[in-house]
Image (cartoon, rainbow over all chains, first blue to last red; front, side, top):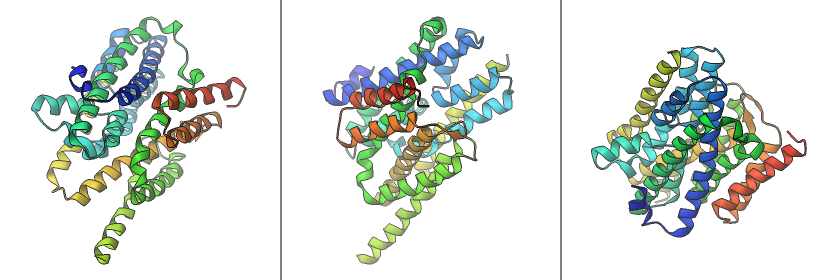
Length: 231
Length: 103
């Protein structure tokens, strides 16, 4: 299925998606490996990657559960981390809001990266749609393949921190949002929101600070009134 | 058994969270300005996610190696380097700093 969408994309974009997929594959390997090392059966980590498909929340919930932190704490941490998908879906939901099947699949495959790539595609709705589906389906494939492989070959897998992958994944997202930051009001909102999130992240549980960053959007309201007044 | 319940609840909850975005979107009439604000909202959250995951790990200062790698990747992206270059440079910077003993 990704081929049908990927056909419409140019080579530099496909290379970018391949670079992302390689990184996500290795993180998937490490997820499977860590789960197995904690005594989680391979089919459970595989089921989690298949049905949750949200890396950070999977690591969080799995980590809390295997450390004996309990069901409620484990699930709550994962769900709070995933709340950021609400603003993502509000921004790019229109991209996959077509047939019923596309709505269900597109909803399940919404991630940081599929959102960032769809946003980076700009104002061309066809390009955004092809980009979204190519990224979403590719990442779903490598994340699940990585999880299963990692669960079995756990000992052979290098630690993502040793490889520096924990720096590569944020750098990818940063590269993808950069074109949107050329808009000065978006940049102002982003810097204000990021300052709020950074201050909050030393006190509040992971997942909440990035939502607090949305207060940065006040800049946009002010700006809108400003332009109306000027007109 | 506990793990299975956790997977099921996390999967169902995450799907509903993901679903609520587009459903909320349908309920509001989308002017060009509202559309721009929604896109900016996702951009703001992504930027904050980049910054917090570069600087804070489990509620504590992440050390120098991680933000240094993200920064190198960011500068290369700003200079319009391909994503593969950004990935390798960011990862290599952080990995080499850690190898040299910089946490």
